[in-house]
Length: 139
Image 1 (spheres, rainbow, N blue to C red):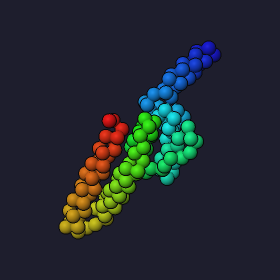
Image 2: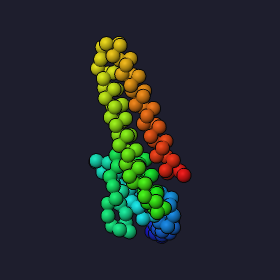
Image 3: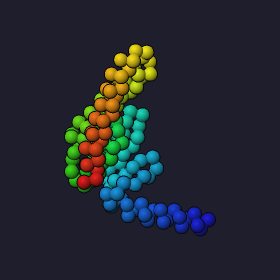
Image 4: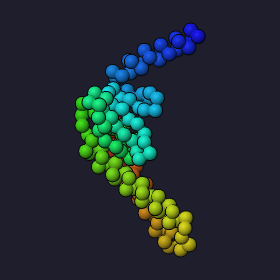
C-alpha cells in the first residue's frame, strides 16, 4: 500500500527532526528528549543516556524523570536535586495513601478529623514539590 508507506516515511522524517530538538516525543513505549530516553518499569521510571549507553537514574514519578531528562538533554545535570524532590514526593504520596486508608477504617470522629487534616497537608506538600519540579521542566 503506497499510502501506508507514505505515512511511515512521513513519520520517520518527523521523528528524525524531533531527535535533534529538546521537545519530548513518544516513540514506542518510551519518551525521548534528544539523546535521553525515559522508560516506565514496574519500579518507577528509568532514564537512559543513549550517547553513553548507560542508565542514569531511576525515579518514582514521571515528572521527576521528565525534569531530569530535559535538563540532561540541554547539558545541565540536576539529577541530585531532582532526586531529593522525588524522595519528598514519595514521602508525601505514601503519607496520603496511609491517611486515606486510616480515614476509611476509623470510627472515631476526632481521629478522622485529625487524619483528614494531615491528608490535606500531605497533598499540599506534594503539590508544592511538584511545582518545584515543574520549574525545572518549563524554565
